[in-house]
Length: 120
Image 1 (cartoon, rainbow, N blue to C red):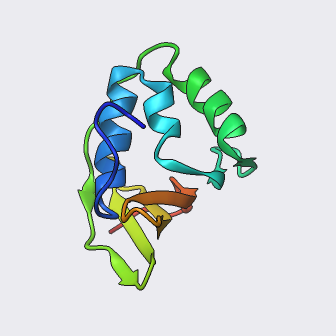
Image 2: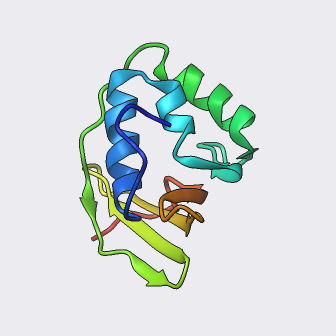
């Protein structure tokens, strides 16, 4: 797991993502995804599984871009599944599905970082 993890609540996943992105910590990023997670890529294709997600983030982080925090909505939790979302500073909305693990921590199982419209 990341040096800042694990996530003890669904919204902590976004906080961990941001922190790890800004540190260029690809393994920390990958640690917040389940082994068979799906990440929707900017071109609409999907990275399936941690290896594909790692490859995407390794490329994204190689020039060490900085990311600003967005405004998280309260998670919608139904048992061991949660829907999380964030409005980014550019107005783009992200949507993620998280699953509670047996140890009580949370991992993303689906991540759609830009769902195709912006908040008004």
